[in-house]
Image: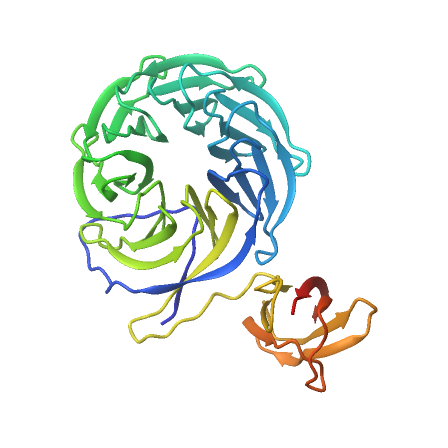
Length: 419
């Protein structure tokens, strides 16, 4: 039995039952994109990833070829973009000391700001449902706005959480707020003009983010790691289980049986199939703190304060077998390392059995080396070039092109050999 798991949106139902033996997986690098700013949050939807890029506002990235993500559009915001939520043709940006911004993303290559509201506090996160935007507004707690007219949001109501609201999710009649030193705060918002405090759970740390799955709220707590809180009775939330991450837990999302935690200099993956006993399932070191995480289809998108990182999580069964899900399309990755000396690695992806060729050319168009020329089964593959030509002679320093052909797809990329 082979299982493949990767991240974005979820649906989990916890209760009494039989839980599988926890499995440990491998987190694999797929691709990376250096954004112009400092990525704080990320939201993935279909083949696009929306990045809250701090002082560069919103950046939109095409990930249809995950190994080669491409920046296709952006919209600067007046403040510091630290949170992003996307619904339909609109992205909602938590813009810190400039409130929240509403950006039309119907044309991803030319997004435009169409509305905003300068909240009284510092907008840390925004969640949208219907015609209402719910903002975790720092010292001012929960702020609620009517966005039925996108160009002119209007204030509806608020509840001072008495902590520092940093994360927000709304489900049913309730808003669930990560309130930093006050832990999880639950507010009845059935009447948005008159929110009512319902319940709370103090995590004994600093709750930074909240994510709901089934009857559980998953909290990323800077001191206490992952906290799993049962919210079946919102007036009396109860701790179910916890997992202490190695660093500082900033963000959490859940997909399938796994919680994906943006931690201090790493992504942590935790098996929560038994929420009373969460266990480590894998991890990946990042260059800087992982402030944002999103999971979509086969891929994990991490905003690591420096770049957008694309990963994939592969889980082995109890017999140790493992496999990636089949790629969605033909593609080839950027070689790594690049520049390189003396060797570099190239990965390529085939959704079905195909005749494949990968050739290396110099800038004059002369073929230097054929790396692949054969029929390959569907899957993900990796090949190394050692900087030598077809006659095993070392090639000179310089720029080279490598061309991938499979089915009716042709892709060409550059690489640099330095000696």
